[in-house]
Amino acid sequence: MSSRTRTYVAFGAAAILAALAAWLVASLPVEALLGSRVKLPIFHGASTWVSLITFTVMGLLAVAFLVVRRPALYAWEAGLRWVSIPLWVLNTVLGVIAALNTWDFTGSKESPIQVAIQDPRLQAQAWLLAAAFVLTIAQLLIDSRVRKAIADAVFTVGMWAVLLPLFLDPAKRALHPDNPVLNSGWEMKLPFFGIVVSVLGIALIASWLVAQRVRVMPETAHSA
Image (cartoon, rainbow, N blue to C red; front, side):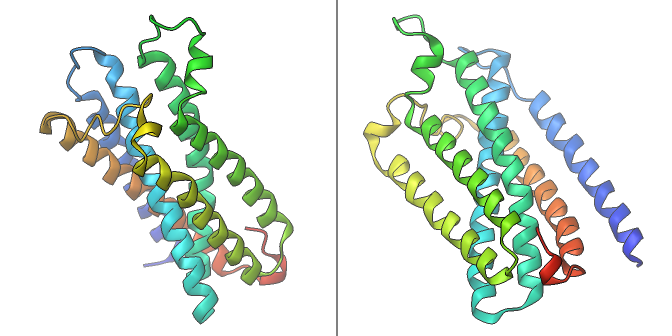
């Protein structure tokens, strides 16, 4: 199979997965309190799971590349990086929109935006968005793949240093619904996990496409 054919197959597979994800979102049952508005936070949650997976794998590949220095590892690392960063931007925007449209602000004297920005998880998303911006600038300025890999690994460690306290400290989960999907029935769980798998598949396909480009670029000219 030629390189062009593989690319066409990859785009076709991504289109199928995108259609599947859209169908799963549309098929979500109406929730008693949120109604059809439940679709956005569920998609946001699934997309966030995918981001955490791809960023984590990126960091692991960065460490592996630093150990064995195989170009193929770096190519996949770079591919995951350049897919994960825009996906995290999307997740952050969706997170704010979902909070403003689904949380109950009737008992608060503060504006919805003021309440939302006090949520520890939304704050963490904002901090990681800022870190992703710094990582982007660093990757564009650094020529050495070793230093790029170090930056990716440091980002991943920092990401989990920010996120783990949110998962482990009950007080920091006070404002943000904790595992609303996992605490629901399978009519919610199955579509959710299907969306996770679909979006993850799209992310991996996109990462592979980027990795193919990275493979043929010399290190001194490589800015991805």
